[in-house]
Length: 356
Image 1 (cartoon, rainbow, N blue to C red):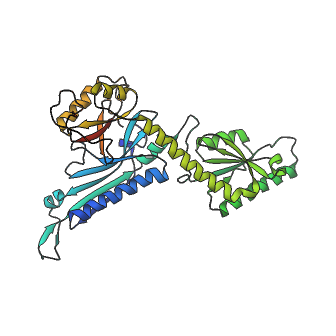
Image 2 (tube, rainbow, N blue to C red):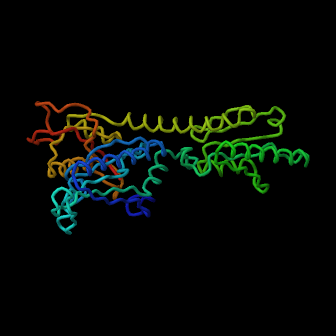
Image 3 (cartoon, one colour):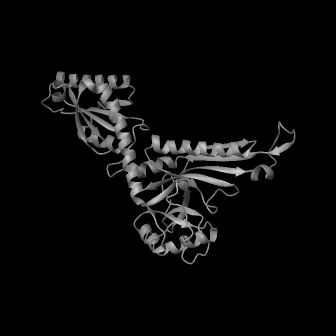
C-alpha cells in the first residue's frame, strides 16, 4: 500500500449538511468543491481537473458526485483529490430526516450533501513535487520556509570571526521573522555545512540561505531554491523584501511546472487504438462516452491486457476519472462511444486513465 493513499489515509476533514431545497444544496456542493480546488492549486501548487463522476463511480446512494482529479506525472496515473457529493433525499427518506416547512407547516424531507478531503493530499504533494533529493515543499504550506546555514567555517577561522558569523545569521533570522517568514538558523556545530544542505534539502525547505565570512564583508548572501537548486547572490539590504518575493516566485513556478506536466499528458481521443497508445504513454484521455456502467467495465477490461505494470498495481486498466466541467469539445451526431462496438450515442467527453 502507498503511504497516505487509500488504506493509509488517517485523517479526514468531512462535512454533512442538510437543506430545505435542492438549489441550496446544489450551490453548496460547488462551493465546497471550489474550496478543495483552491487547497490543491493555491496552497499545494497542484493543478486539478474539476468534474462529475460517472454513475458507476459516484458515491453509492447519492444523486451525483463532483470531484477534483490530480495527476502524478512520475507514475502516469491520476488520483482523486477530494469529493463533494449531493445525496438528494435518498438518505433523508430512509432515515426519516425531516423539517417543518415554514410555508406550509408540513413535514418535508431534507436535501443532503456530504464532502471530504483527507491526508491523501500529503501523499499527492510528495509524489507531484518530490525529486531524487527528497521533498520539495511549496512555500505556502512549508512549516519552515527558509533555513540559514553558516558556511566557510574552517579550522583557520578565528573564534571571534566565527562568533560574528553566527551573530550575523541570527540577525538574518530576526529580520526574516519580522517580515513574516517562517525561518530557522541552523547553528549546530557538530554538523558540517554540506551535511546541513543535504538534511534540509531532504526535508524540502523552499529556500536555503548561505552566509559565509566573505558574504559578510560584501553585505550579501546566497539563496538556494529547493525547487530547481538555482543559486542566487543577493544583497543583504533587500532581505526583507527579496526573500518573501522569492517564496512567491517559487510557489508560482512549482504550480506552473506541475500544470505543464499535466497539460502535456491530457489527450483527446476518439479511436480506441489511440486510447490504448495514450495509456501506455502515461496520458489522461478525454474521449466520447455513453455513460453506461457495463460499457465502462468493458473499457477497463479491454485496457488491462495492454498493461505491463507490475502485478497488483493500482487500477491497471483505465477507469473513468470524471466528466470534466470544461469539455474539450461538443459531442456531435457522428461521434461514437470510445468502447469498440458500442452502439449507444455518447453523451459527453469523459476523462479516463490509470488511477491510484
